[in-house]
Image (tube, rainbow, N blue to C red; front, side, top):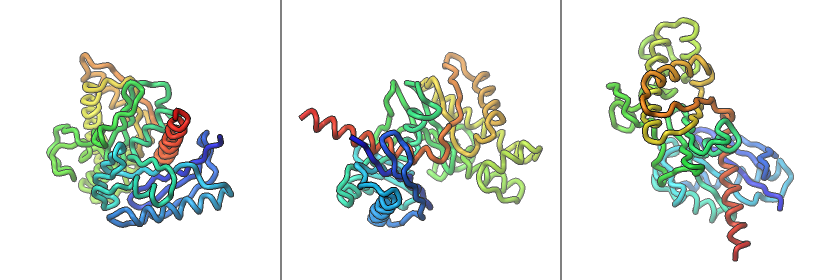
Length: 309
């Protein structure tokens, strides 16, 4: 049976959507501003509209399933967004809400864990049973694959951005010393601006400035990389992944940022296994591809259950 799924990666400002076949070939794409509403209804309506537009563009029948991923604390088992600051959501049962609206099987998940699913299956983490995908963006979070299975813990696993790495800065979560408050893309940009008075749009321009000899940028980037390595050491001590896949704009400079992390870990690890550090392959497409893979999983699980009756 030919499979067809709609995949949506929902951010605080933009929805990136695609219609995919069972081999992840892209049949149509769409990008829109995210519909806002605290109860999830506006996004459910937008999802229905986007799916219809994708069908029209591709000239196909309706998809067999839909995958939607969002930022925040997402309980995939219960299909509830427990908290999403970017969407102004708290305890929104979006999976069930959307399934009732569409009349189709729906996979509802977390954007970073979905990105990890994509990297583990078709990206830089292929072939690994124990791996972590660490995304450094506005925040910092990880997707954890343990013994070949994604570890979710009702949406609470993988919050590496809130490991205490020992600095005095206050985090948006209310704690002090969080990795996210010194090494996220937004924190790097903010700390550079505080030092120089010059605005920066994310981490990449600060890294570029550091490579060109900007002393303030070099200090900010060095402190961020030390903190990130510190956080990764905690992750390694607890879970011992064989591979860590690193994603986000910070890593476009590749060896400039990887070498200091490798060196820090090489000197700091004692009994822990040194992981292979890899740069993510899928970039901005990881979340959308992951949403598609989650939708295919739901579809195939339902087919298996029906065949087993």
